[in-house]
Length: 369
Ligand code: NAD
Ligand code: AHE
Ligand code: ZN
Image 1 (cartoon, rainbow, N blue to C red):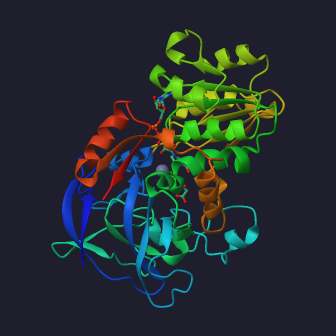
Image 2: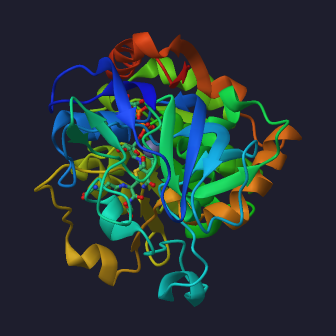
């Protein structure tokens, strides 16, 4: 069949809207009609050429929602008409990682996913007879996409796709990082570096956890209003301080914060986030994704004196078992999604979504087909 898609033909170039050829789903695969997809900073990161796993030409996009059109051989858990969210962190339930009960990092399809191919090593997308690669196992920047069964969460068919698509990445990552990774407790002090979709979701999660003080940090002051709406108690712009930002936060809090979250992808800020954590027990969660060749550093003394450095993928959430419940929470108003959607655009205008993100004017642009 044919599908309309925004294709990343080359790193650093705008996406091109073209009609691709799409093969039907094979064994263990599912054809999904995407209705909406958010644009996450990770899509821009990969498009920039900084992603060691970046491969071109590819159909990017990993924050979508849609409806099952057709299932391949052996697919038992989904049927045409089911409403789904594609998962870049699959959940097979059977691998060492799924069985461990310690992590959401299922490996069932991860190796092939990272190479831009389906589990059998081939692509379903092609253009003029040449393969076009998949991305993060999702490729939601195509109206129709083929996804592994283990990479699809079935959700309530009444859910609003324009909003719940954001649970495919940004909002789940931020809220999950608070509850599953940091395990923020009532009264804890939290610092959030970077107030995009991820950082604002961390703030929302911290408020759910009844954190005492939530310090929101961004170099773009236009993000502060929404941060306050979500529950930030203090907003700090590092540009307004001569001192290193970690010193500013330590001075604001006495000994530092119980939990900090880096939601930018900047290794210098990752260091600052670690160093503003409380002596003795403070912990810092890395959520931001940094480019090829980047490394984090700090004085080992920072860890010797009790600070801990953690990281999280998809907020530690197991997509097939936990995401449907988060959709229900959103439908009950317990997770607020509407304020994240600052722009809605048709697929043809997807490059504007990237521009808005780079200009700091959007939280999430949601693309509709
Ligand atoms: P975004 O671009 O919407 O937001 C980033 C924010 O950081 C912006 O508000 C920007 O003004 C701010 N910022 C930039 N430099 C800063 C600095 N030096 N100090 C303070 N603030 C600064 O991005 P997003 O979509 O929210 O994603 C954030 C990061 O999280 C990205 O690196 C993305 O790739 C990553 N991410 C990781 C996961 C995961 O599972 N680990 C999931 C989703 C996104
Ligand atoms: N491919 C990159 C790493 C990119 C990365 O860290 N991705 C996050 C999700 S970002 C979503 O917006 C993640 O979940 N990573 C774990 C995984 O299995 O991909 C690289 O450095 O090679
Ligand atoms: Zn993302």
